[in-house]
Amino acid sequence: MILVTIITLTCTLVLGALFFVLFCWGVKDGQFSDVEEAKYQLFREEE
Image (cartoon, rainbow, N blue to C red; front, side, top):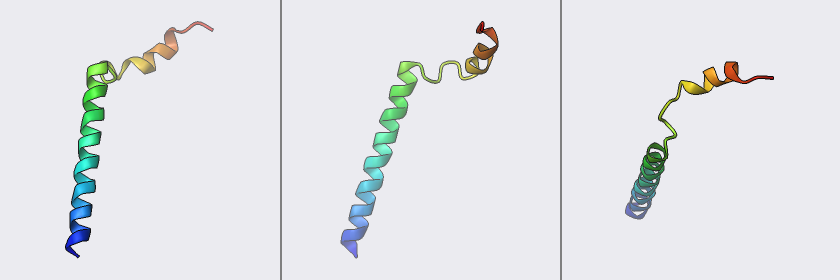
């Protein structure tokens, strides 16, 4: 039973660290700089 707990905690910590790194990468890359801009771009594009 203790082995299952250790494996579960390890997987949780690894996945949490992975998502945190991906989030930091997205912030650094500018993915969240202007989230409202996408809906206004549609109206500015010419057909």
